[in-house]
Amino acid sequence: MREQFLERQNEFLTLVNERNKLKRKLASYKEQWLETDMKIQQLQKQLTKEQQDVRKLDQFSMSNLVNKWKGTMNEIRRKEVEEAAAVELKLNEEEKTLIDVQAEIDKLDSELDQDVFAQLDDKWQEFLKEKESWLMENTVNERQQLAELYEREANLESLHKEIEEAIAAGRSAIASLKRAEEELSSAKSMSTWDTFLGGGIFVTAMKHSSLNNSQDYIHRAQMALRRFQTELKDVEHVADEVINVDQSTFTTFTDYFFDNIFTDWMIHSQITESQDRLDSAIRQVERALHNLQKKQEETKTELDGIKRRIHQIVLN
Image (cartoon, rainbow, N blue to C red):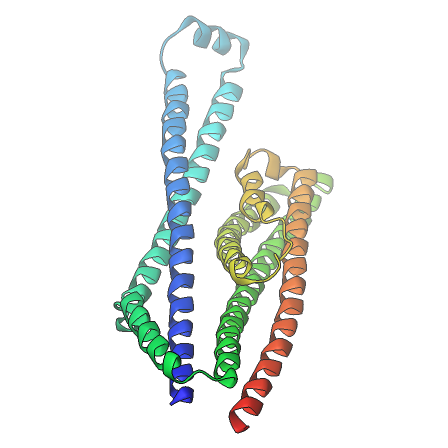
């Protein structure tokens, strides 16, 4: 009878931990959704202003007339168009991010709607009352030891799973970051040829193609880093010590890539700086993965020890 109670308790704790983990992730993604939606609204206002600035250049005014006489109108127009295009690019990125974050929210909502989580808290309280009544009549030292060990076992198994999910997310993020880095390397090679060797129109077109591909991979990397950040927070919630990672790097480094996209990225030195930023993000994730793997090994060692102790108590 005692083993049945302990097994049921372990099952309940596993379900409660899984349910709470999903709730924490859902709250995190909902917060990201609100932040992204706010950015979209701000960028929409900014884009409207930039578009109005472009349209003003086609209207009659003394300043426009003077600029035409001075021959600077084309340069002013080019600058205004590039500023509007850069804002539009940022807006498109945030809109794609919002879609991706919403997909994560929908997925988590669906997982939380599973029958296994239905009225879980009520069932857990009923079980605790049932177990308490039984223990009042059948209390022995071994049962108390098993109860503590089973609880620790359930928590460690949950932590082990969280770490595995975080490691998988981190590896995915590194893969996306390295793919973006490859595209930037290609653009850098084209930039060298174009800048120093006079590559011509074909080389310039190839360079822009690599930069466009980089933007796509950077978007994927950003979402992968968001997932990694969410998984890290989940690990920190249940771990005895915090995994030491500068998580701010993960959500801010991509901002650089969407500033002055049409002007700065055409410069060889700016592409190099972009690569440096990618390298920094990759190193951050790699350090986090190292810490996670170390914690995973420690968790597995303790978990194996607890399982052996449970086996010894049950056999005795």
